[in-house]
Length: 510
Image 1 (cartoon, rainbow, N blue to C red):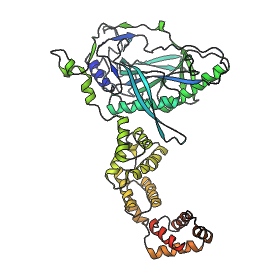
Image 2: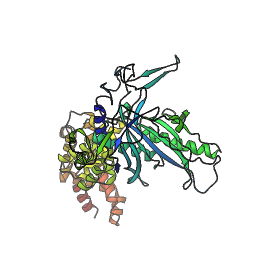
Image 3: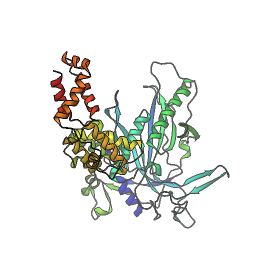
Image 4: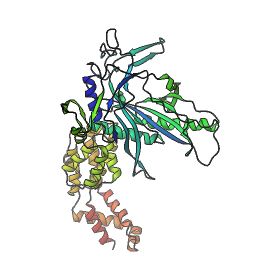
């Protein structure tokens, strides 16, 4: 039971956005399956013509692996990609002589938290630069064990079992069908992933199975009963989650528009074809067998120290108020702080927080440069992040450190290099991580040309060779001056001091 209490304490760190907790005994029960069937009313067999179109309805069941070194009820270690069946205790394998364990233990009657709300954000609007905030209701969070893994060998027509994951502690979060498309579901899961990672309760690495999503998808016309749902199981990528849901919504719409019937079934997503494929018929309530586990005592949660019974040591129990007081800065709070502290746009804070490690990088650059945050943000979200995405690298793998980028921005801010040269130097820094911005500037003679006599000669040459533009400027079209400035920069390979160039050109075209 000690392992259970440790795992439960870690799980409760995720209750910041859960509005109602049950300070009651929560009994672990055993079950054949842990899927929570949700019965939706079926649409008529033939889609009726109506002004309102069919829309998607999405609910999620998320399994997040609790960040612990051992399993929930045994001392067997937890490690990814270990040899099959190398991390299995007698209890995990349900060998004769152990307590009955030939079933999955889960909380079913008294989940650890209920009736919560997760607020998530996504970019919308015509230019996709408006931060839209939405809410999804969390029906419940419960603690449960992971199960073993079946490995199907089609060549030899046999199935092998790997019990390494059997008994690993999970938190299952059941979200109500409050979403309408893959993009919303993906944004909600990403927000949850960020929260869990900030709390340290789950590493959230989907490629290693630490966060897995089952999507319940149906379609209906607004105002009518919900349609028959399908469940797309075990999606281990946020990108695939969005694609699987959108494909399934469109598939169900197509079925109904052809006069068919959507089947209540479990499906899998094939990332290669981009399609969902049927796996099996959906289990009904009659397929579930829940019974109390007599060997596990109640898990009791206390609101605060004042609610503790006499003689109970606060260090030995779960006190909700104590956990709340120790919560770190959560993603939504961090976004608001970035906007208020640095004056950046909300969509920029969205980008910073959503990319692992980017906030730390951004703030580290700001500490080492006098450049305004609004100018630094463009370099971080466009130049840096663009290069990282192009080469599929994380922020931690960037060949340009925050201090190196800050040095480059200082050169530009102090007038030693132009903005176009700064981007040129950035490219060279990316290719040659050992070189500083100053070294590259000196080696390639990229310093700003501030010699007034030299600039006068270049500007005069440009003015003499473009009489039509000069005439347009003298006729009142001052915007044409920018074209002449660009031509001067071309002549100087982007090294001309723009302030001096503008002043010289204004005199020569007045």
